[in-house]
Image (cartoon, rainbow, N blue to C red):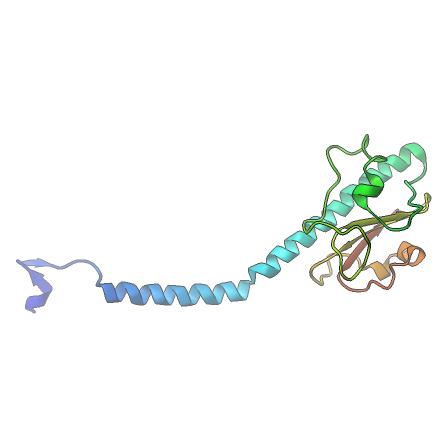
Amino acid sequence: MDNLFLNGRKIKGFSLVEIMIVMAVVGILSGLVITVINPAQLRARSRDAIRVADLKKIQTALELRFADFRNYPATPAGWMTVPAALAAPLSSYYSGTLPVDPNGFSATFSCTNNFGYYYRSGGSNYVLVAKMETTSVDYVPCNKVSNCTTYGCSSCTTNCHAVQNPF
């Protein structure tokens, strides 16, 4: 009983061991929560959402251009990156610069390996394609877009999002 009092006063506060035990429990619980939340997967899904929104912005700019000229910018060389294919034709219709994939881009199109926004058009129709990091129901796979059959990206079945001109 004497150790609870110091000069007639009660000792207040926590001991070092009690604080260390609480810190260990908090650390274990926060580690479990972080593994359940999976922040890397959340970041990948947010980049995919950015890609979907960017393709919608590019599609809107293409439709504004179509309303004025009644055609889409053609790509005679096949698949091109969006900045290479559309920077000049959309410069007066698009405020600022064209969006760029959050992971950058490669100069050549591949539906399995390369990130980036790719464009292909014959003048009367087009398709925009982006490789995604996750598999989700929030985007349309390339093999479900009819213009992908025309331009040879219908074999891209997973982690691929495509938009085309409205019919």
